[in-house]
Image (cartoon, rainbow, N blue to C red; front, side, top):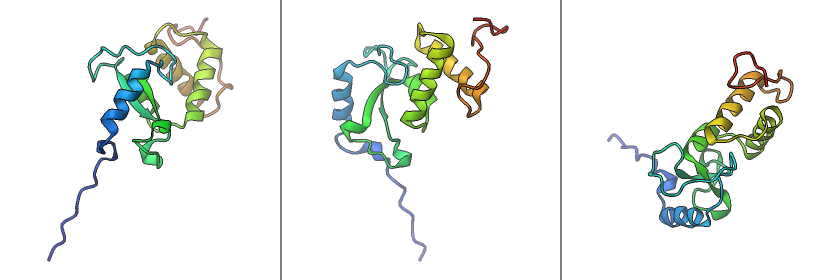
Length: 139
């Protein structure tokens, strides 16, 4: 008899996850990735909407329902992060600040972070300084 495989359940669908999302959102903290405020009134799916992000991703053994493992992030920041480690995100954020100064928006941060990753190729700090919005690279 052919055994039927039971599909894996999404660990984020455990009971208590919705309460955790409400708890973290109620703190009103800024996005842990870019450091800018999160507008809690934006609908889910909006690039600047609140999302709960696991510091240690579920794919790497992190708990999706542990308060200590979860922080608020913009949807776009959370998508950019993927499964990068916290240390990697902090290093990239510091490099963006060093190269381009403070960012006025989440999208400006993400553009700078992508520029750092494109230019650095794993060697953060060794790529030439370039401005992400100017083709000449002038600051």
